[in-house]
Image (cartoon, rainbow, N blue to C red):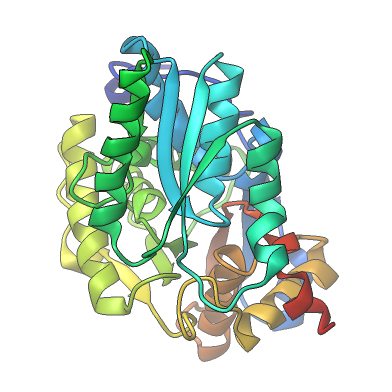
Length: 344
């Protein structure tokens, strides 16, 4: 069978293949019946393998393709204290024989000892990361600028640093992983005789959202992609997704233009902000666990699932449609919220 346009485009880009792919595509029949709504399916990107998995594995493959090509010996990145991206960066660095320095941003106020030391942070330390702290979690530009200072110190000590920034003014290299994931998803759907009407996912840095949207459109698929905001309000996130999507298409060399009509986001499940647990997210975690044995995290996937549940209940996802929930992982962060979840 001939390669798809996505496979052809991505074959030209440096990459390190470490993730366990393809990830499963599974029915959520019990949850579908509980909600009395459409056919619900989950794409299990929590099962990407390395260091407890998650969506960042797909993104890391392309970043580390660049790092290896550059001869780097130290990976450097930034994220919130319970960053899945930072954990995965550490894991890939170690797997490839590199050191890792991560900057953890104080992005979520009012958290105690578990949040600062358990979950992803515990794994970061187990992986041997050198941890730096950054006080202003809302200063995305400042956080990236500080990475340059960390990199300069590594270079001064004789190292060869490779920086993975998160700001929207940098090329969306990580989004390429989800351009490919869209191709993988459609291949699985075809094999299972499934027609996908909508994909629901968490939308934060916008790499996953942009990559999925570009991949689907490049392959001629018109399924809606609904991003549930986890950090910014709807207007700010829609603008970010639009810009990142078109930058992703350009980076991949795909002849696709994403328009405002393609970008669907909702901030109805954001609550008071990033990393803050909401009643809707708590309900989503409970329903996913009780119905499907599916474990969600409070920061990303629980809010995305809340968005899916809300869309079914309000009828914006028709009862005859098929909806795919993208489970992006993040399970380690669950253990950083033990006090909120148990009420102790």
